[in-house]
Amino acid sequence: MSFLADEYVIHLRATVNKHGRPYQSKTIRTYAEAVRTLGQWMSRQGIEDFRLDTDTLNTFFRDYNDSHDRGGTNAVQRNLRTFYAWLEEEFDHPNPYRDRKLHRYSAPTGAKPKTLAPELVRDLLKITGNGQPRVREFEKVRDHAIIRVLTEGLRAEELLSLRLGDLHLSQGLLQVVPLKDARAAGEGRVIPLQPKTIIALTRYLRAREQHKLSGNDWLWLGTRNRGHLKYSGLYRMVNRRAKEAGHPPVSPHRFRHTFANDLLSSGVSEGDVMTVAGWKSRSMVDRYASDMATTRAVKAVKSMGDRY
Image (tube, rainbow, N blue to C red; front, side, top):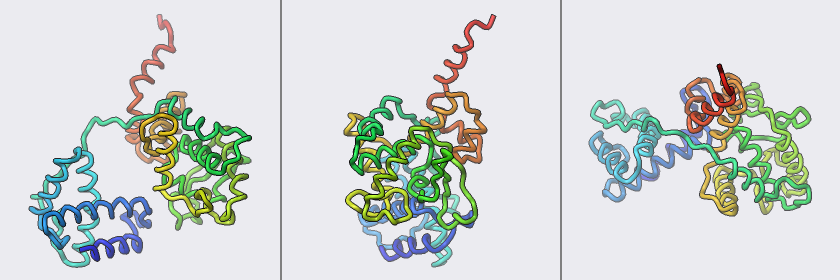
């Protein structure tokens, strides 16, 4: 059973998605995790072959939904779609996703992404040294710079994909290039940086010069002279710092929700927010900024004072 899962990962790494672009590493991990989840359930059921019929796959989704929320079941169902399309193409296995009998688990409606409290962000910055020049620890200087860059609205994978050449600190900018293989094509977008983010990055670059792998082109390097920082390292770092600051676990992606709310609250137009965030659809603004929409509306109306 495991050989199919391994072959599927090789397939993802060697092919492109429906937009003609290589699958990003986070996407591959997410798809592979869905297959592993299905494989674990199959092992408990005594099933040895991933080529399931629709009824068996329905049973898996029902069992998964019994112990997870609806959104989680929807995500696993979406992430397995590509796997079964691959099985259909490679092994002529009837694709259960083409069968009307497959039970569909829609995503819950009305769920609002949560922004981070300003106090939490400030505490994370404080626990990493507050950007003070007297702080000499590589790890603290790096973590502080990473948290600062997260407040600029980058996706986690975008942050981790940054190279030294993507920084244009003299202009107060950095360029986000989402796909490594498209870097020469000029794809991506320009991110205007806050003054304190520029200072934090400058200090990190100075500390980075002492790293054993400073000649590496990747911007973010690991502690103990380890190489390129990966998502698992970023996730652990953010949650460790949150715990040190006395807060519950934090997903790096929540900084992006907070970024959207911060800009809209400051009067930045929705069109400009879309451009900086790299969104093509107006609906993304609604989704990412929905958590604090009422608060922003109340402040905007109250700021008008007496209208008559």
